[in-house]
Length: 140
Image 1 (tube, rainbow, N blue to C red):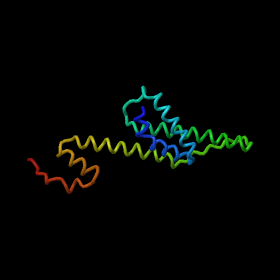
Image 2: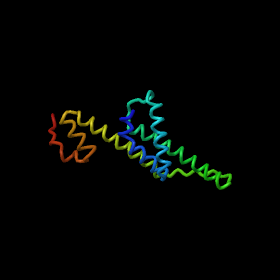
Image 3: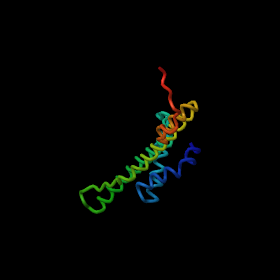
Image 4: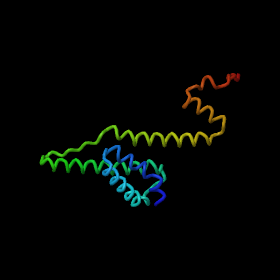
């Protein structure tokens, strides 16, 4: 557990801070994320640990943001609840998921035979399939 905290603490804090924009609240949310991670480890399905942990941290930060909003509304004496979840913060999670998928795809492509790897890479990644394929002869 300590190794995981050492390895991911900065990342989890940054995710929480990107939502909360407050050092103390981000530290608290990060701590809650690690507690939740520990409780949820038996349910982890080996589908990208960093993304899974990021999702936990992101949701803990959103929960903290909601609590802050409710406290602010209560402090103001208003009956309206202030809930502000910035949309751009979701981009952090989306970007991490996309990057992790790209890494997995690259790993799988690298496991292909060289000939297939070149074709896949050219077509999907470089979009140069026509310039890299040899001239095909027709069999009559």
